[in-house]
Length: 403
Image (cartoon, rainbow, N blue to C red; front, side, top):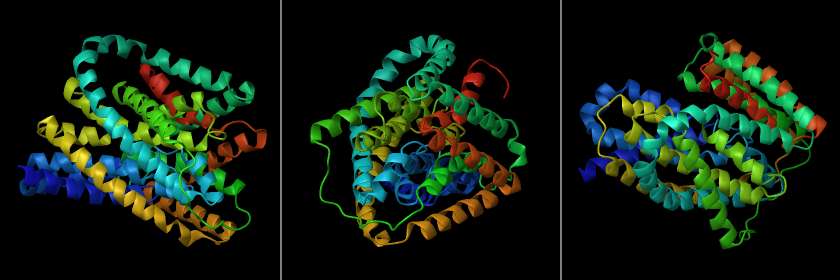
């Protein structure tokens, strides 16, 4: 049994590395591919190894997706906000530090998430009906705080609503996309335009500075504190219905401006993303509810004992932490590269990926999202307002309003 779990974990690490390092490929896409091939894989690996592969892929993705976000400025659904300070540090020559901080935040959150899994198992199922009833109110409160505490509430509200309408449009017409690698790909052009291309257009001058790493600027106590804060935020959205890592990142932005606390924000958001995976697993076993595509893939097969999947997650976290730190050392490769052609190449790559994954309609969404995404920089408000693209549809769905 242990050999099967380790074999599945290794397979999951490899798949998670593909989804984490290739821009535009979400871990839910890899889960869909595994699910499509489950008839063969279950016969070869068995349910325990199959479950380990799925969960290990999810954990691996939460570690490695910071790399394309940092060095290329391309976000996915989990790194839409953390891409901003991480890529900014890269433009200061601190890309390796950004990736290492992210890896540490994710690693610390694994330790913090395990006790939370036990607490959630014991306490929360009994109050879940109350949580379900109030989730829409919670989201409205979070959105209101994001707007009220912005530099310009009027502009932030406008950007939140416009990006929200664009998000509603995407969620309402998913059949217009090609969905080449699964339904999760529809978010790629939306978030890439809002948080990727719009940022690249504003920072496409000069040369990439020499990438150097001379230690962390954060003290150990601050790093541990932000990891715990992020893990708690990720745990909350991992349990609450309809919420995602992006929502946790938006909540964390209320307590710290990523422009002023870039390193703390990277640690906290990375911790939130990894903790979210563990608490999503707890929600599946305690409530039979799925919080992401990987949990949905797990739910349609025979569930192995949860201890096997937790073991797979721990092993994957240990291996991929070392892999992330190792890959971060290659940041020096981009030193001295002219930013303008690099940005142009990345924008071209995103455009091609949008067409391949989503078709002509994806290109239209990419263009509209980019147009909305440049507005915060022009009016000098925080780009977190663009999270309306995710939050407004979720708010409406929480009140059973069709989107």
